[in-house]
Length: 167
Image (cartoon, rainbow, N blue to C red; front, side, top):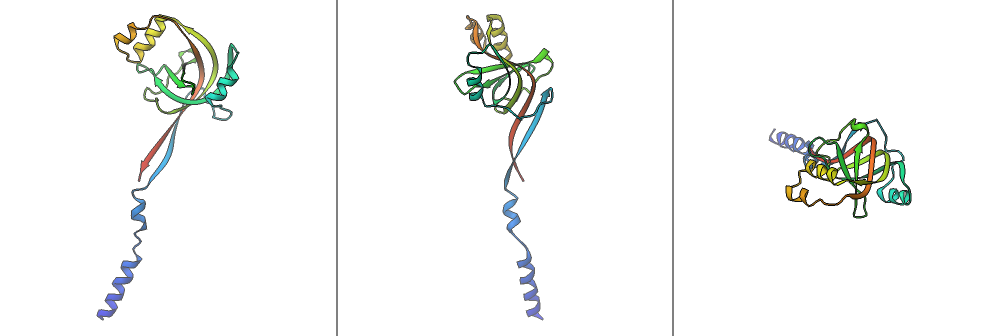
């Protein structure tokens, strides 16, 4: 009888699979996607490097592009800046002030559709943007010249956030 109990105990223990235990701490990656403004898709979106080559010597360009978000208006999410991979950023505003993006979107990837152009931003507007970005008064006072840079008016935005989730 003792032999049967011993064999039954061994069979019971061996049938327990410990391989699930190691998977409990595994991480998997999911992507959170949000849409803002007109519903757009990522189909046909180009990189910032491709954008720069297409935009060269043009006044404006209707386009869809993907780039990393470096900064967002901390007051309302009414503008954001994208990394253009050339040491510069491009300010993105939203058509007719009709929608905003999450204020915590910096560090995520954006796909934007709309019109790009070169723009001169006056000193008063630059100071307003600096205030929106929670710049110090010293930084705001240091703005003394207009800025010529890329500008983009988006009709739609997709924001993708890679998230690692533990299970």
